[in-house]
Image (tube, rainbow, N blue to C red; front, side):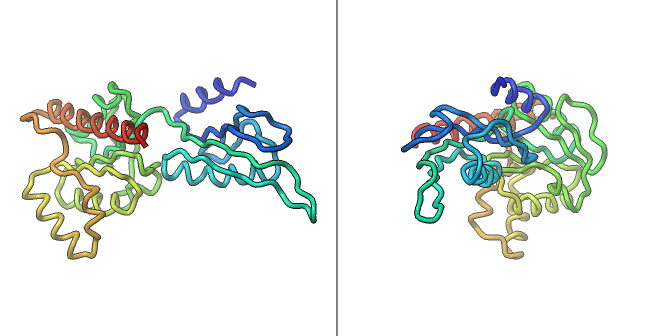
Length: 253
């Protein structure tokens, strides 16, 4: 079995998963250091690091990695069978598998379609969602209920959300729903006056100040953008800058 070919096939189909690699082993075991295993977002596994409790522990931890989008170094102690110790102490590195930085765009108007098209060209994994059927942009498109936009959308801590719907009232409703997701970046199209109004309403409804810091509004770099295409460039440029900054922080830590 070609593990890396399986990974490519998974990502080409739009799937995500976790790659588990055996990095250290203290004691005997059936699998050597460097052995790999994939756990898909559907709970399927490709390969094994030894079966039994070890694989079960890895599969369980992989669900957390899928949710956070952050890699983990996992230590697993050997099984205890009465007074006997079965297996060995191992360390397994679990890293998320995605087809690129992910952005979920809510609103398929002129700006939303422009952001989606430019983000696809920039290498983002893009989902464009609307409560009306979105037009073709080169991104994955999905029609959602306005009261449950994120119910079927894959949103992790590392996911970027951009909100640019057709009305202020819908923007606010989507923003409230976005704050219930783990997304670390929530970009909202609009003016500073709109920001003040929305933040005041959110604070009055009990939203914590630390959650408000996840909201970037007005979204996009200040380049004097006016047309939907120019606004799309400013937003995607900001996404790239924040993505590269987050990768730099990970490397330094």
